[in-house]
Length: 115
Image (cartoon, rainbow, N blue to C red; front, top):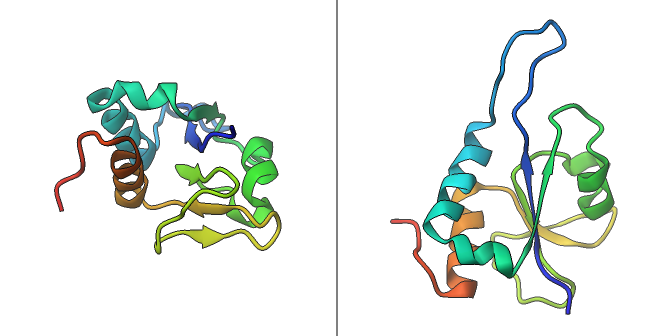
């Protein structure tokens, strides 16, 4: 059975050598995963480099949706109202930190973000 895929960014240095930097939104999702570490046994987690193009994200949701974090739902999964659908691949996905954490928490019955 196909699993959902969560894509997060690795830390990086800019071309001018400044950094290292991290994505605050990805760090928030990484923090959520520390509260609910078992989730990583049930989904695919991919960490990609900051520089574009981000081919692994393009393959999932198309070149116009290269932002991260992104949770891409398995084919045939029930998706929340907050989900968008890629015009390029037809895959459903969410990009907002709260939505990502809430979707995972509800699906796997673990700690949820406080509203």
